[in-house]
Length: 351
Image 1 (cartoon, rainbow, N blue to C red):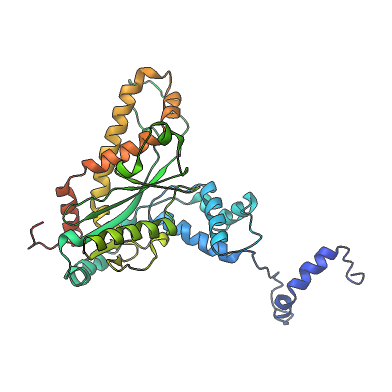
Image 2 (cartoon, rainbow, N blue to C red):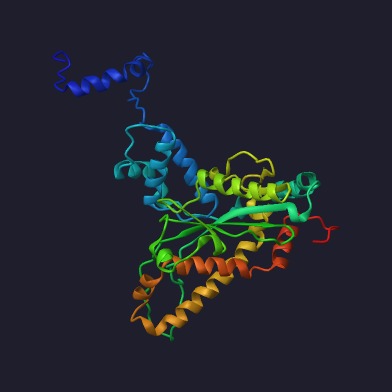
């Protein structure tokens, strides 16, 4: 320590931990003098980056807090000790991958029409040949920022209006339906396991037409998907049916097939072209959901003095009602047409 004028024992211990890395560096004097560093928690970082890419691919909103909570969940899942998910760590992660300036784009730009056509013409017929339309299903998630107001409004010419702060509280929703037009109850994910408004309203979820799950980020997780899939498998087993379930490659979906539910993953970056739910089913649901939200705003107009007060009044039960009603309004004919557009349909079979 005296020879190198190092006064801190902590520095010595830190250098000793990197002994092998320094010794493996090139000895050539002409080699660039580069300091070799190993980032801590690289496993967490790698998994978190995959999560970010999944979010971008699905056009789902993503916040700094989402990154932090997901990183903590990853560390817990991988049993990595000492990881705290500090604000500093999240900031450095965002800086390394330029997340502050990322703009989300739709999948159309990256999707190859040739590959999609090949999938529809060559792969899908073989995959669905042993299943009836009523036994061919597709599932996918979408999100709803239930307290967010429209970004546009009508004003008189020359009149200026200021928009309020965007409220990003959201729910995630999993929809699943068959090529015959059959809709399964939506799976809804929030932040609270048992919202107080559910208890206050004496809501019986078993009879309410949806299933409810919760975690800190209101995102789909592998455990939630696995439980939902197990329940679906048990239902099909009781009906003595074996079904096909098409789904995208979202990380939470990467589980094994069940005895009565065969999973087939769609080609990456092609869901906008080959996934039935993305061919207009979810868009149809969104249209109805927005209609019910607008109806609620109109009826509440004179109950509040400002838009801000109105948005604060919206609760999770309101949001769930809009989801359930919106999904119920989606027509069977719309669903069948979207499955046809994706090539996932037996044209000679009557549904």
